[in-house]
Length: 304
Image 1 (cartoon, rainbow, N blue to C red):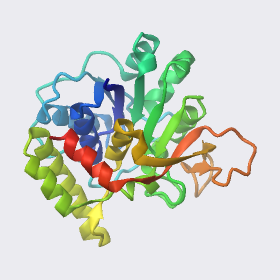
Image 2 (image 1 turned 135 degrees about the horizontal axis):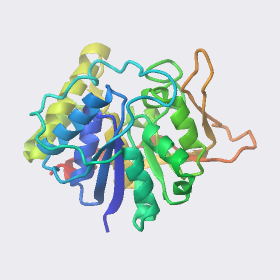
Image 3 (image 1 turned 90 degrees about the vertical axis):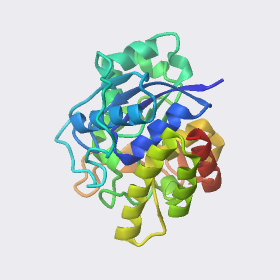
Image 4 (image 1 turned 45 degrees about the vertical axis):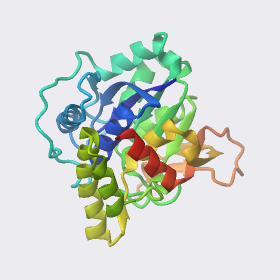
């Protein structure tokens, strides 16, 4: 039976691939997509989301517009490759009426709530606000699987990964909610690298969703090659969806993780008790490795 999920995105290129994978893999039932600020302002991330769903033949998937701003503070600058409109045809489809926060509350209080994984691949503002609006949903969400955080070094500051730094207060609410969490952080995504040869194989599948994904992934991977001298690149958010499709794909360790809110140099850090030395409850299954070959197999199958 397909696993129901709600995908919460801030659609740039990597979110786009996550949407296409979640929408087409037979092991996943994509219930809805909620959209947040992050890789760009909400008007950009929402536009990108609608373009991806249309180009990927997922037009019937409900889309809810969400948070315009972080809980506190201003939008942070995202990576230039992520914050622009995707090179896809303008969307003819429109968002579903209603706010993302209200949808999240109503859905998880309903009968399907306890069967549905919540998967944020952007800032966690929508869920944090929903938890503040109706704390009871914390007992209704069976698990959060999120692309977020890092055990060691961030990708936006030396301390912080982008999705957490974009709204640390929201992440603090979510990570302290008591909901079981799987954190698919930078240690995992770095091991799920994709090469140009992998993209060529994906393009050969020649379905609409594979063609769209291959074009987007190629653009992202070329940036890693041209700017960092690497042999491949990361499609961060697709790793989180793959971890829902097959949880065995990633190796995890239980740790206590909290979010740094006040540090001048460390705001947005996912502070993990790696050693287990401190007598605090372990609240997160932290990803530390991924089976790259199996990840690619999931990607090919889902987009074929």
